[in-house]
Image (cartoon, one colour):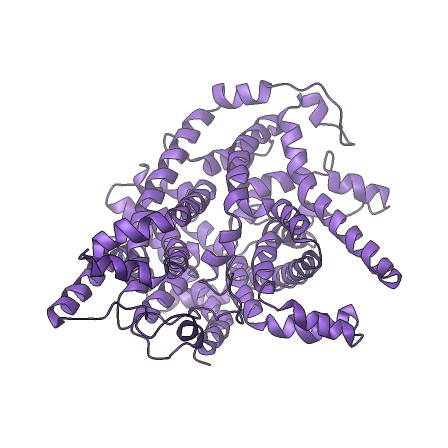
Amino acid sequence: MRTGPPPSFASDSRPLAGSTHTNVQTNMTSTTTSRRAIPRTKSSYAKRDRRLAVILLLPAGITILLVMIIPLGFAFYTSFFNYSLGQEGNMAFVFLDNYVKFFTDPVALRSLLNTVIFTILSLAFCITIGVGISVLLRSLKPRTANVMRAIFAMPVLISPIIVSLIWRYMYDPTYGIVYFVLDHLGLGSFGGLTDSTTALFCIVITDVWHATPFIILVASAGLTVIPEELYEAARLDGASAPRMLFNITLPLMTKVLVVLILIRGTDAFRVFDLIYGLTGGGPANSTTSLSIYAYKQAFENNQMGFAMAASIVTLLCLIILFGPFLRNSAREKDA
Amino acid sequence: MKKKFRPGAIAKWAVLIIFTFWTVVPIAIIIMNSFKKAKDIFTSSPTLFFTPTLDNYVNAFTKADFGLYYLNSTIVAFVSTAVVIIVGTFAAYALTSFQMKGANTIAGGFLVAKLVPVISMLLPLFVIINTIGLRGTLGGPIIAHIALNLPFVVWLMMGFLRDVPTELQQAAMIDGATRMQAFWRVLFPVVLPGIAAAFILSMQYSWNELLFSLQLTDLDTYTLPVGIASFTGSVSVDWGLSSAAATATMVPIIILGFFVQRYIAEGTTGGAVKG
């Protein structure tokens, strides 16, 4: 278990081999010779060493190149063409037409709006509930907390398509437990998944069920690095629980929260499986996300070029929305 | 505990108990449905007591091709995970134990790769895989899952490898071992539990992944999530059968997940937190 402050995203408290900044922790716990790198004796040895490192990295690099970079380049290139599947030899260059079409299509804009609403709502609920539960768990005996956390973590291990199956049953107007409970509370007229005003919210609830455990796992790990003495000192000063939450816990969790917003936010932004399983994008496109929209354009309307443009728009929106968080967490590692 | 804290303690436990119900009830409902006859599933108030039956499981394996999907998913998960573990562990070794310029940047690149929307990768990859004739084979999802899991495994293994004291490797190399000998004799045995955790979590992701498998497979190569999607896609859902399929799919992964869930945080957040 680490004792220092939580290290930042995309870096680690210990310097990687070859990095220039020194690290107090490492230097204090080990002698000067025991840096990460093995001391070089001969330059030919170092050369061989470097070659070996490249060879070890090569398979991973080739995989990322073949399965991510080249396909993304292909998607970008073909988004300027009109073509259908299997007709790649018969592409018509239309330049930006697909993008113009996207931003003038009401359904496309609706799916963009749906995705943004879904992401904001899901993030807000997941982080509030997840961090709240983690803070409560921290106040328990470690043994009890571990058992409860193990139970709470279960949904995150379940396939999203099974999650959508489970909740489709729960939301069933005739047999579902959601209506069973709502009826008893006198709220039986709830539209659920079949009403275009409530369907998206129902999917948010399902996503919160599925993804909050992930927040609990990460936030709990983040909380373990906050020294207990801080709370003891605050308690001696007569600080209330909410004050300790806002003045100790949350400020010290900032980095973890930024990482959570980045990872959970991008995850919510590309939502596909849950919507595919629960509503398929309906009713009346009220739950169509960008991923669902691009998917339908490709595999139902067979407009591959347009679908590529939609998927590139999805990627660009994600970069615009979450780029600042990525920059932020990358910058913190130098601080 | 002082007396004045008690209302807080009651509220705390109330929240935790409600959250336990919120987490467990949906899972319990679907598991119970899988052992119910149709007449017990289709009731307007939930039935807690019923005569259990295995009919739904029998139907899933005989009427539906559930056994085949199970086999397909096992093959895809095992092969893609085996490749990811080998490729990812060596990459993590290169990034942690060698004096390499740009190691930080490369490691960060893996993390950014994880944030790319799946749909942006699927569409072009689908066209490419369709063109080279791999569509409908298990090769499609295997390739896709390798790419999807690689960043996670690299980061998780980097964390484990960094935790091994440098002195161990140095001592072996002073004794005349080469880099790779030092890796196999010294590092590998120490990080073996970490490799096991990475293996299970990578399997879990592959086992659960829908979108790539949905488009890259055909009836003979459906994986479990695609099979389950096909059970529920139609207008009327056979709840008994799909509940049985869902239970048989999720229970093994939940049980395995109990042992490794604390590593999920570390592998996903790029070492920002340690489980």
